[in-house]
Image (cartoon, rainbow, N blue to C red; front, side, top):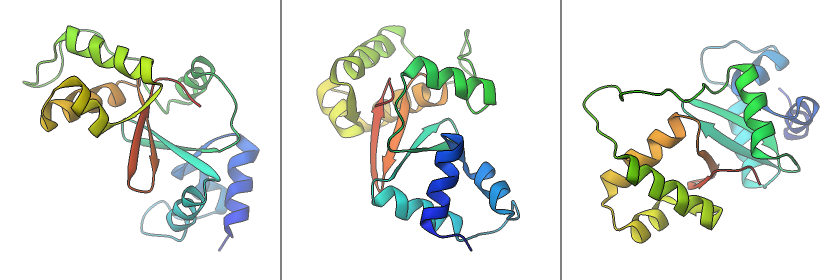
Length: 159
């Protein structure tokens, strides 16, 4: 069982890691629970790492990670951790308005980093509309979701 320091060192060696990378690094089975998610949450609470979510992939970065969004996106695309944004009609029956997406992206760009409640209040949207649009942008890899405990922050660029 690795310590928090060893988990942090493994993330720093590569510059970033997802759970699968870390399990492979420490020789753990892919299925079942392990001590690793507990170590990651503890490091996140201490502010030593930052988790970013794009779609259903969480990527962990050491808090001293210094790079621009374009560079980070290029790395994540090369590794297959995020996908290129798909063009065309959305799946299913959910309809998205381009002007609403543009308005939301401009709001996030102006404020650098925002919470979902702040988006909801300032855009004048109900909760379902707000979560629908923010989840779409996160899924498409346009917006990064940064989690710190229960707090969810959204940004367009890495800090």
